[in-house]
Length: 105
Image: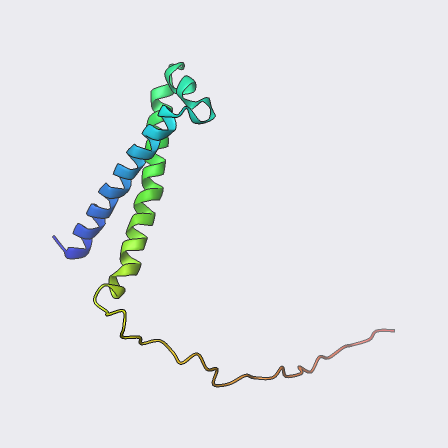
């Protein structure tokens, strides 16, 4: 299996694990009276699954994005700075643009 696919599956599993924890906290602390809505309705378990699933998609996407963005920074030392000097090399002044105005009488 390619390394990137394995990384993606790992991050999706972490994202859905976080979603399970988040959904459990929502139900346990009865946020927005969600506990009564879930357990008091015949379709409550479907709603609970949808909350878990869609939060899992969001958390998995965010987890994977964070992991990908941090990949380039893992191998670099903190002391070795490769950024720019902070000096602007050019500061162009605004240039006027010619505008044609046609006046109809």
